[in-house]
Length: 577
Image 1 (cartoon, rainbow, N blue to C red):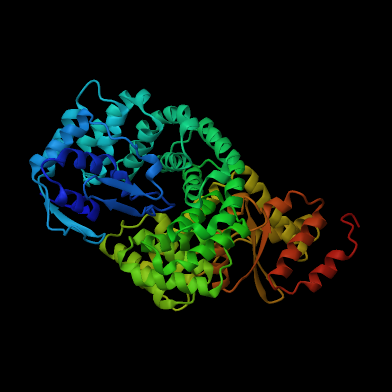
Image 2 (image 1 turned 30 degrees about the vertical axis):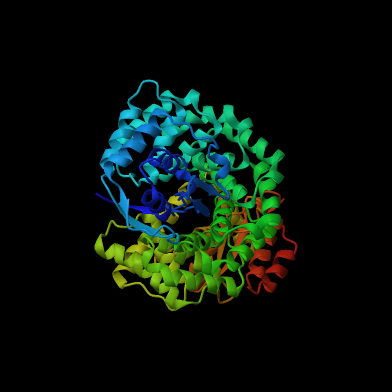
């Protein structure tokens, strides 16, 4: 079999002599985590990886060092039954490489029988006395050997990890969790069971270890409120000890797990604002994604993170990072400068072909909310989604298909094929209807109250007049977009949109997030001026007249001339006269 390793593996294997084969192979496999690629989940499966700088010196005594992962690796190497067996397997399998001793870091092909190595790992894992450290070594070795598709051996790894959960230390647990999530064969039950082990080891974890474990818990979707509470206390009380990258990983873990702890988020945001300059482009994108999932529109933090990402846009390791950043900024309805939007669009246009359709659509949607005018970039991204639908009508889920329609409407100069546009529009309408159902009784009551206030704001006085006006508000645009409160105000088409709490910032309740802003752009494209009214502000209003005045205030902010309606509302009115 032909296997592709990173140059670290190739150089190590090509320079091993018979005398030091075991020790060098042991170091290679046990420290494989130093060459890491962490895949992390976004709202629509956006993949991410955290790359570490590796320095390898293989002259005489083998050492593998990582500037940010070193604290996770054990400093002393002991010959366990696993490492001896694996080293023997590597030797017997006859792995060889044509890489020169001083080849630059790059991927090279290494030939050998990887099946023999995996077979030896399987044999060691079959032992009844296998320890947590050995299970961890096996998991990391499998990731480094790129044996991600062998679900049989991974099943045994997860089974043995549960059996040996009490023998893990902080380093081995961290390495195992990293390997399990990196392999793309994450087993929720195993990671969830190990959350108890993680809780018992919190006090002995370094900031790097804690950040990687938190990231892995989030990636697996573990929702252990007690554990995340302890992590929050640990992080917030020692936030100064965490690097910017560690804070980004930790915050990402909380966001991915759906654990919006205000204490840790506030502490992390403050520290990230100060440490943004030390972040890589990927770290910055990861932190912004976390803020988007947590619905935090902390302007100072976002400004600092965007500056960091913008300065490293040309050095992003993957176009997926640019896609994640575009979606996240769009979701937060961030007001990016033209230079940032242009840099993002350029990076995405250049790498559009390497994105999955879902990633490309998310990126296009984000660019649309950000106000991108680069039609070529937008079209390149949208074409990926169109191609997926052309190949398979079920190739996109309803969310992605709806976002495809939304994105095309927001980026000027882009166009979807007629059949695709029709289907995507229906999917968008389906998603909007589903979102309306989710508002619940409180949301429905707010919408009804807002409709009545809108009727009064625009001239209705007596209850029958208000009821008649409310009945006439609901309409549907020619594109199929349902509008709950639509009216004509002196020749101007007006849409009054309720801003529910779920569509608003968690830190600034009156600020609309990207989905609400994107819907407003669709309505504007249909000829409406959009007046958005926040549920958070509505709850503090008093009588009917005050509420009607709030609607007119929102309409005025949207550029609608409401002078005549303000004057009429101010006139005395006696419903019994």
